[in-house]
Image 1: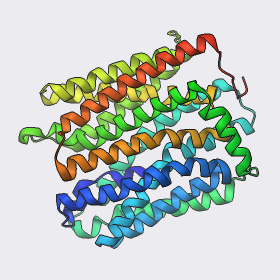
Image 2 (image 1 turned 180 degrees about the vertical axis):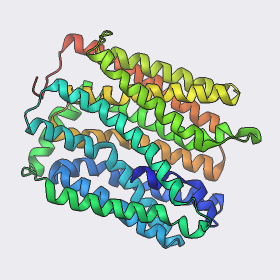
Image 3 (image 1 turned 60 degrees about the horizontal axis):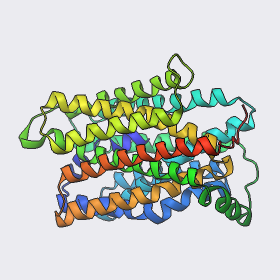
Length: 383
């Protein structure tokens, strides 16, 4: 659902006659609620249950798909808000639910590590499949009719997911708000290591969002003609490769502390974005750099999930992730406003900020490693 809804992006809006200013307006309308509402959704999932929030994810996608079928200006605004909130849930909801179910079934921690890289790997594979499906749905001659087809497919998928989730799983009773507030204060806001981990997560989210917004304009700069649809699966394939490398560094022939692995990955990603920001490159070199960046992200995502497993209790995991996304969402909104309306910053400046975010995340991982030497983490999960 995430992939089908996001394949066409700007092209879909342009096809239905929206100007650049209107596109920016709708992006800002969609991004703004994620700062407050999106930040609270993770805590809401911890309080009312992960299953209910994952159902909310499906309902939001269904609502967005229905709005796109009636492509009018009010419905575009509503669809943009629904998709932004659904994307916020996607970043924490299913991971948190999977970890809780994993512990409930009594599986060991090493099998959970396998699940993290498989989730990243399969997510990238499903996004490639979504591109294939969306292109197939609009491949006939009646383009106006078939531009609605991806939304129809998304609505059907959302309904199937709602039925499947509602019928197949049950949850234990949620905690009370008072208990949750005390746990949040004790384990999250009073623990320097979790704050470092949260800032690193926020930096990753900002850098990835900035990349997906600017990668196409960067490649087609100076009027270069490129088949972006051929490059998109290459980027996701690189992320799949990066996630597949994760077991080699954790349990394989190249054992490293997770923090060390992340320091190297963040540093390489920061260098790549710095080169893109400050030096003109040919298309081949740009694509290679973009693939290297995504390979690093593919390694980073399961590594951060593993650290969350070591440091964050299950009952606070969703809240911790969503709180860490608030700074990145605010930064993305600010970039939209400054670039889209005021034109006061260039694309290269935003990419440079993303590079700084990567270096900042590397520094957080170094500090996390140093703090771990003096105060070993408390593992909240089965060994």
